[in-house]
Length: 289
Image (cartoon, rainbow, N blue to C red; front, side, top):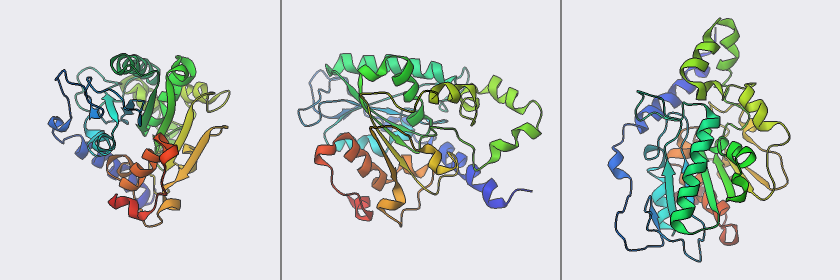
C-alpha cells in the first residue's frame, strides 16, 4: 500500500489547479484601443520597448488556461514593461477551462501559430517563452521540430516536465491496471504523452535536449510532486541554466502548482532569465519585490 503522503501530494496539486481554474476570466487584460503602449497583457497594440524588445508568450500547464495560470505572473511582467501574451492550447471537445489535454505535438502547432500572430502584431523578430509544467516542456517540440528556434530567443520553464511527470511514482503503477494506459491515451492524449517513457518524450529528447540559438532556463522546486524526480526537469546543453528554487531561498516551500501560480521568488528568477543584462540576485527578499 502506498504511503498517504505520496497519494496526497499529487491530489493536492490537482485540487489547487482546479481551484485556480475557477477564478473569473475577467482578470485578463485585453485592450481593444488603437493607442500603442510599451507594456500590457494580451494587448495587441503593445509595442515592445528598447529595454524589453521581445514580447513574452506565456504557455500554461496541464489543466490550466490562458488566464488562470497567469493571474500573478502576467501582471508581474506587465508592470516591468513587457508586452505579455498568453494562449489556450490542447483543448478537448466539450471540456471547458481545463486545457492542455490534447496531443502535445498538435499543441506545439498551436503555439507556433500563436507566436507568429504575436510577432506579426508587435513587429518583433523574436519572442521569449515562459511556460509552467507541460507549458515549459511542450515548446521544446516547437523549437526542435517546427522551426521555432528561428523565432524564439529564450525558453524559461517553471517546473517543466522535460522528461516526464511520474506523479511521485504513481505512473509506475499503470502496468498493474490492464487497459489504464490505453484509456488515458484515448481520453486525454496530452496526459499520456507526459508519462515517462512515452513515444512523444522519446522523440522529443532523442538527439539532445536543446537546439542551438535558444537560451534555456529551468526553475525547479525540490517539493515538486508532479514532475518527479525533480532533477528530471533539468536540461543538458551548452546554453542551459538549471536553477533550484531552494538554492535561492531555502525557506521557499512552493511545490509544482505554487511555483507557477504565485511564487514571486520564482517570478524574479524568470525576470532575470528574460533580461540577464539587468539581472539582480534572487533571494527570499524577492518575495516582496
